[in-house]
Length: 113
Image 1 (cartoon, one colour):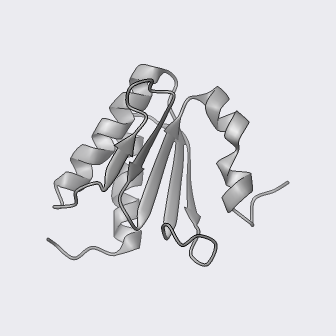
Image 2 (cartoon, helix red, strand yellow; image 1 turned 120 degrees about the vertical axis):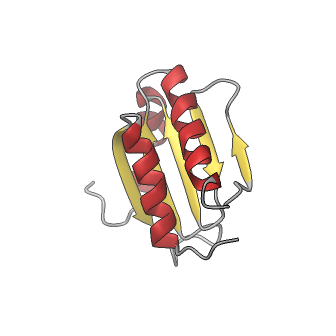
């Protein structure tokens, strides 16, 4: 397994999301706020089909660097897919799901109210 920093992993994830035109990509450093992960990446897809494609692209991109996701949840519905890369957890959602759960407000203490 190649050695890759958390920041490099975040960059790979963002690059994969940008390649397929994800909307509103937000990277949050949750070290000290969560024992689950160091970074969270949240992005919006315009349809359940795009949400699935974005998740697949992230998985494909990290696998090219010998990184296997710990788990992937939500692929059946495509409304909200979580890709767990251990140090980085990726949330890809439909706009209405993202607005409802508002993860940025929950995790990003620097986010505007």
